[in-house]
Amino acid sequence: MKPRDRLRIAMQKSGRLTEPALELLNRCGLTFRQSRDKLFCFGEGEPVDLLLVRDDDIPGLIAQGVCDLGIVGRNVLSEFQLTAGTEAAPLAEWRKLGFGRCRLSLAVPQDLNYELPGQLEGMRIATSYPGLLGDWLARQGVKAGVVTLAGSVEIAPRLGTADLICDLVQSGGTLVANQLREADVLLESEAVLAGPAVLPTDERGDMIDLLLKRLDGVIQVRE
Ligand code: PRT
Ligand code: ZN
Image (tube, rainbow, N blue to C red):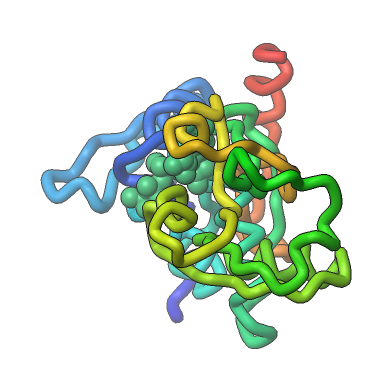
């Protein structure tokens, strides 16, 4: 692949992370001209462009070298790291960005009295994060069934397809509305700047260094 002379950052096209990610990049002095199809945004001042995609695609785009960096939830990055296989280029979390905070938690029906992970032995757990859940269960030494669902995980216990769930929680409102109770936290998440574990040493590496310095300045002012 011909090396690109512009940096390309992947971020969520439309969702919870879109606005805060754009605002953060703006504060780093980066502005973009939005293209008509809104997949690609050309950087106006600096040689830094954006690719607007589904958040789930961001780690893969970095691993393939299509993008140099990405702004994505730690939950999505960690799931990719656990499930991508050894042939995928290793990724790293370069900065935590302080927005999009949530947690990946186990939630049980109100009448299930959860105290210890050992109780989950033989139960069925619905989740969109089979990698993170499987890793946690293995570390707890618990064998449980993992039911992978793309969405609407919270209704699985009522449908009878699972005994409990493992899903993202923020306010807890969704759990309450589905008569579920948060029982254990597997991962504390927020938006992070993801990139290859080994950063390039060419001009793009210099641009990444500059961006990281600016980010540190912006994040420090915010804290
Ligand atoms: O289209 P695309 O695939 O890009 O979007 P998406 O629907 O997968 O993602 P989106 O925009 O919902 O979330 C993007 C990222 O925001 C997630 O990967 C998390 O890192 C982060 N984030 C922060 C959250 C939440 N808070 C959150 N509350 N992602 C999802 N939720 C959902 C959760 O799944 C549950 O259904 O909101 C519900 C729980 O919220 P509460 O407040 O009721 O607890
Ligand atoms: Zn998604």
